[in-house]
Image 1 (spheres, rainbow, N blue to C red):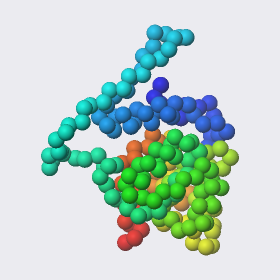
Image 2 (image 1 turned 60 degrees about the horizontal axis):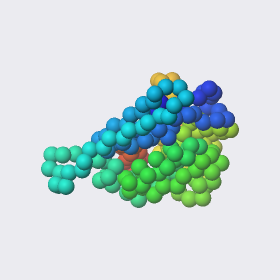
Image 3 (image 1 turned 45 degrees about the vertical axis):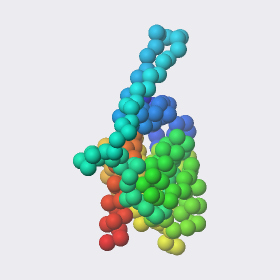
Image 4 (image 1 turned 90 degrees about the horizontal axis):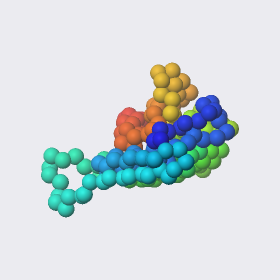
Length: 203
């Protein structure tokens, strides 16, 4: 029920997105707040019941040894300009929110053409691109930016994909991406991956 990207057509240029992404995002957000989400039903043809349990927030200040949520307190991406491209609106919203909470200035695109237009319209520090999109996939983005002669390619490009085998990761890097982050995306992992590569690119 909470798995992402269940789909009949698994090709990178599929015409239709997978099912269950919204519920997967709900589960991820609830768990990041220390809660749980469950589903139950009396059987086929009956309603489904979703139960969300969240801990009560303590009114006291956290002790020095407690670790705060990295998405609330981090400034790792302060003032970085980032383009996010993903054909799924829920994923775009999740990525935008997470990166903005980390201090980034984020522009979002729903397609390869939109992403290319954004990159050509201004200078960006990083590109975060889904690989599997209808029509033209994420490899098209990085390939066209590499061929541009006007320096519009962001310094760092990160690929996102539900497929994360060694071969998938190798293909992303051969295409020109600096790194490959698996979906379901853990925002903290993406933020730290971007920070590491941006720091290395600035050195």
